[in-house]
Image (cartoon, rainbow, N blue to C red; front, side, top):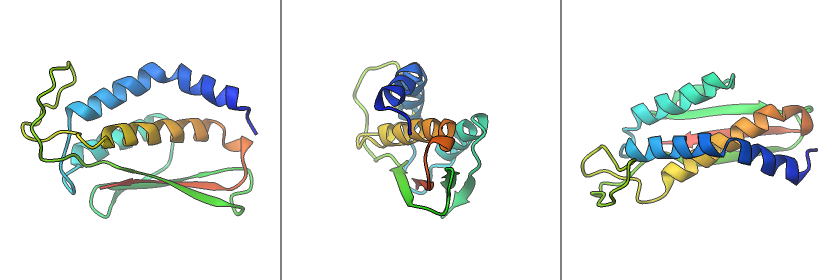
Length: 139
């Protein structure tokens, strides 16, 4: 089992990548059950990292498994919402919503980014844990 310092180091090492992901997701919000481009972005990241997954689950949802050393042992699930809200963003940031009247005012861009980061780190260390981690990106 990796030490917490190792996990913190992995998060620090991908911090810039995580910030870029979150800013991309924030700039491209989609309403509930309309998250087609969001799902494509998530699927693209997972594919880039070599992580098997299923797309188009319950609409634009994405699911997958990360199997540790003994996948039949404990199973946990990690989940994140992907949808945004029908709210006009008034912030003036470089990654401001590009979809007029739609924004991530609820933090789902952060939830999705955190789940992506967790999946990558767990996938890279799957030989370090027993059991299976299920992941769900919920439309």
